[in-house]
Amino acid sequence: EPGPITRPGLRDKPLDVATGAGAEAAADNVEAVRGAEVIVLAVPHAAVAGIAKEIADLVGDAVVVDSTNPLNDTYTGLTTEGVSAAEELQGLLPAAHVVKAFNTVFAGRHADPAEDGTPLDAFIAGDDAAAKTVVAGFAGSLGYRPIDVGGLRMARALEEMAFLNISLNANNGLPWQSAWKLVGPTEAVR
Image (cartoon, rainbow, N blue to C red; front, side, top):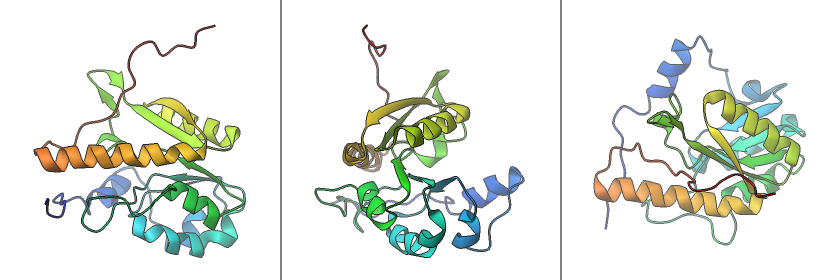
C-alpha cells in the first residue's frame, strides 16, 4: 500500500508566486471574498466546509470555483460517495454558482498550462451556464482550452480523474506534470 504523498517545498510556492506577482494576502477568508464576483477555492479539501461557513454570509450569488479534490488521509480513495465535493459545497453555499474547475491539473502546471505548445484542457462542470462562461473566460485567459463537461453532477467524474492522475504519479514515480487532454475531433458536427 502506498505511503503518504509528499511534494517537498510545495507549501511555500503559492506565497512566492503571489508575492512575485505583486499580490497581497488578505488578513482572513472573509476579507478575501468581500465584494468578489469570482472566488476560487484552492485549498486542501478538508478546509472547504470551514471556509464555506466563514464566508457564507458574504458569497451571495458569486461564482465559486471548487478546484479541490476530496482525497482521504491515506490517498487511497475519495472522502465522498455518490456525490462530488463540488455538489457538497453547493449545498453549503446554496445561493452561489458553484463550478468545478482546475482540479484535474496539478498546481505546478498553472503557470504554464501547455504541453509542447498545446494548451492543457480546463474541464468545467456547473449548473449555471453564465457562471461556466465566466470560468471558461478565466481559464482561457490563463492559457487553458476550456471544455464544458456538463452540469455539476459531472464534478464526480472530474474528481475521479484527478484521483487517477494523482495515483498514477505517486505509484509510478512520475514528475507530477501529467495532465488529461481530450483528443480527436472535438468540433461540433452541424
